[in-house]
Length: 314
Image (tube, rainbow, N blue to C red; front, top):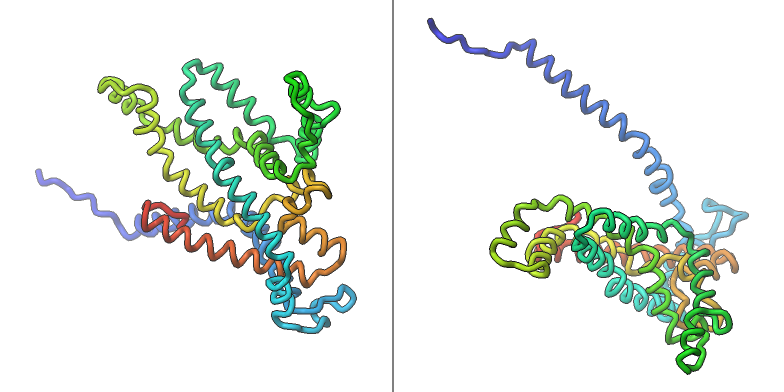
């Protein structure tokens, strides 16, 4: 008996194409609300960039305000305050990258070494909790702990015979305190992606390493850390794209007039001259410069990452 070949008919092919189109249509339909919201809140407001090239007046609107070209951008770039707030922004972001970005990596590696699963879950859960506190609460906690009169830190220093310090008014200490507060608040939450990567590592790799005599440190160095590298690179690139920006709420809630010289960053400067002094065109121009610098840095870092490490955002 001759074997019969199962040749698909044209009808079957058309049915498969309809099912394929129906499936993708459903997926695009699910994606549509997010795309619509993205377009409304992220792309339509881009029209406001025109304010940076005008002497904008709320009474005249964008259509009636006179055009002045690059006047505000040139003013900001030549203003001494530009270099001051830019320096403060870059320095704090540098501390955030060196200490704040590496802290979740170290925390994930250390938490992975906890053998008791229940205790590990408790540690991870506790580390997530500060992320859900507002910066107003966090700043209040740090002001209380570091207070020269009622603060726990100064009480301990006084017990050891040391002089009390009003930490929040010391310019030399503000940046370190701001970075430490950010680490305390976000280290657990930032480590979630690293925990997910670690959970996906094949257990047989650790078993093979143990057979070869590798201790826990060598296993972490040669197995866990290499598996985390793609995620580390991606998050590092995203962090670099924000190196010219910094969270307004963290700095604004922790700064005061005594440390303004080292705490005044671009976002707080924009708030002060934009909302309080109503210089809308100047603040929009600052935002344009800030965004362009971040965009150029992201593109450059992504190309270097793909060339050196082979991993990039796109």
